[in-house]
Image (tube, rainbow, N blue to C red; front, top):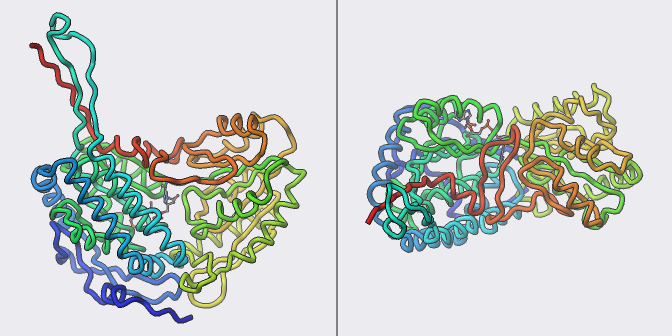
Length: 497
Ligand code: TAP
């Protein structure tokens, strides 16, 4: 496989990577480094500092200064303008950012290009539009014994302060944009910790933000391990809010660590989303839809539709058609033009996924296709489908975060019974319903207990559509206007004339 990296990508890789604090790349207070591995080749691409609490302290000082200083001094129109420039420059750097994402995360180039432009840039642009629309309310009461017409009560929406953002490795640039967009639009400043397994595009975004004119200290990035840097952010007394995307287990640790100053916490956590299919589903939409729902990003996708709950009359035909469609889901290096599935992120993640596959076999599920690691360098795993699953199997209950679809059938018209199957999970992030019967579609969507339900598609995502989880899938919402609210606080003011 030969792919020539752009000069800008090569130049970025050749740099000595540091921490981005107060608008400058600076040395870490610690000396340890973390190798950044290409998951498709297992080669070391570069290394980043294993940051320390002292790095976080320095980043928070810079973020606090900018919060009260240069960032607060901009009008909302000026803030919008600089964010729009940031978005335009993300688009202008699409090739470098996409190449770095493929090298670092493994996803196919075409998907990386879409993520950079169709998601990250558009996400920043969407939130740039909110900067001058953050409004309070007037409240028609007469408090403090004022006569009617002789007082005014109103609210202001103010930025919450310095935000700590902790992100995972599965869609790195998308996750960084997800945190930067609403926090900066609200007027907050940020200390961002990328995942140690995929930090490169978040670092490149810091260069781009500086070029766009975002003042020094508004965006700070501290590389390092979650247990050190992530923990220091979660505990920090001068961070007012943590916005986290990652596993449920780490989300719980962050809640504990945040208690010292009762900082506000938003959590986007795991999922095990149901794909509920009725016999009248449109097969032309359904078959590619199931493949995308589960195999997009190699299944390392919190929204992945990994539990297929399908009427027994069509189950075998649909499974056969999905297996046929996998001919298009070629597994390979993300730079190969026809790859649709790259490697998993790490050897550890591959072992974890393979262990789930073994447990599926041991617990008696029927392996329909896949089930193996792919020979050669790289952490590739075949797209895998298990039929005849039972509700108590690990592959049915637990989030695998890999390319594994588990199938269970139903033989009933009782929507409550089908919904009980769909809701039999500690998670509640996404889900989809496939039918051409509009009443059944809406009733079923209503019954599914998750933050997002799609009808005749899976995981419809747009910057304007609120996204987040019920149950163990999280706290709060991101995206859309609701995604801005956690970065704002309300001040109620009353004046008596
Ligand atoms: P995690 O292990 O939870 O890691 C996420 C981030 O948290 C990483 O930056 C990690 O640092 C950091 N971290 C680890 N320990 C920490 C601690 N004690 N305190 C603070 N931060 C800590 O998740 P992952 O393996 O990267 O990602 C997979 C999980 O994320 C899946 O469960 C998936 O469902 C979920 N996810 C959810 C969503 C949404 S939107 N709901 C989106 C993507 C992924 P290091 O890894 O650098 O050590």
